[in-house]
Picture 1 (spheres, rainbow, N blue to C red):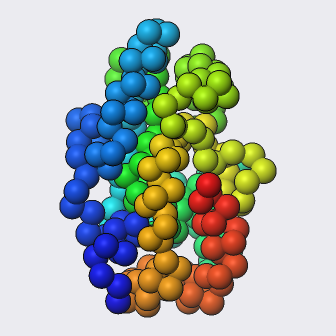
Picture 2: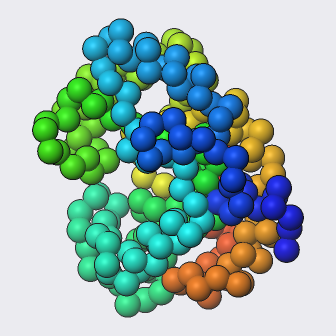
Length: 225
């Protein structure tokens, strides 16, 4: 197995991350840029609020396995609730609609965050991170982010999960600090990931190992930008 330096891009051994908002950890290298983006959002009337940041391998594995067991909602390609398929390969691709493979999530890097406009959240509202929210209450916020990104004024942040790139569904809420993530992704290893799976109780394990090379081409590498 690889040493810790090569495991942390897979969500293992990440001991150097820091808290940027209460409960949310990131790579310390992105903090100054996040703060700059927060100020720009505030000046435009928005509150840059994190809903997800660093995610460990264990947490991503838990999400994956709970979706496979039907303990978390499983959504189809249109974002509608679906029953858990009995066929393991069908189940694998159903989960991949909206969830990354454990060990291959960009959230392992500490450079990627899911964000909303905290000023637009009604009191007590539970954010779902859905396209409906992006087109509804958070639409002005995402239009502002799009404008900043297009003008190269988002301090290195950009969207990764966009239409036409790979097989993962678009996620407007997910932004990444690309200059930092590119350095981290240099240490990503598909063979390390394969070895991790061999020693992990992951749902759809047999199919994942059999199809890992193709899965990487469709669901991992297209997002290494």
